[in-house]
Amino acid sequence: MPDAGRERDRWAASADAWDRWADPMADLADKLNRPLLDAAGLVEGHRLLDLASGAGEPALSAAHRAGPDGLVVGSDLVPGMMAGAVRRARSVKGPAPAFIAADMTALPFADAAFDGVTCRFGIMFVPAVETALREVRRVLRPGGKAAFMVWGSRAGNGLFAEIGDAVANHLGEDGSLDPLFRFAPPQLLSDRMRAAGFAETWETDLTPVRKAPAGQPFWRAALDMSFGHRLGGLTAGQRKALEADIARRFDARAVDGIVPVPSHARIVVGMAG
Image (cartoon, rainbow, N blue to C red):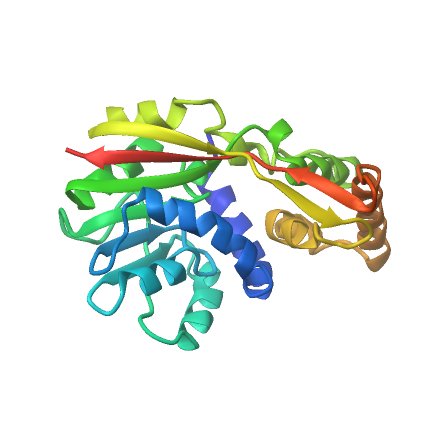
């Protein structure tokens, strides 16, 4: 189980990196946002709560889909993580989300306040996950859907596997990636959701293979966002050596100048009875 204080410190230390990479990663993020918002049943006019919004995704995409008659609220436990979200929302044409700092184990919203709830790669880091799931169920209207996106196994996610091994070799293993794969086993999160009061659950696996050009630092965003809390104390030489190791690892995977980077995510949906 993740340690609450450690996780809060981790994300506070990584907030600048998430803000810095939010815009360059927007197109890639959208490929994850669309199936998640579809799974949540989001349509125009709906009221949606997005948990662990970080730099604003998928809340920003959700606000566009919900339209002027809907409402999207983005939330995050660490206020600093939402700096990028607030910045990006200012430049949105059309409806924008409202952003609020909130603990998903004690949500500051009324019962049945939302038609849907989304959470992209956030539920894994919550120590008291059962409490959080009960809170999500509480703020959903009857028939509303909660859609969580979680990672599959580390072995099935080539980006994390290679970067994580390189970081461990240079800085030592500290278990930073372990929480990411907390709900990798099929049905594990579904079981927790049913125990929290969801009437029905179902899961969908996503296994795209990204094709990245060899020799390009396509991995740098993942390094900064996942390990920003460990990189701050490195000297320029240490950072250069780490990045060179990561580059070598991915270049060794290249076929005809292209690096295949497999990923495995899972969407877990629960319907409120």
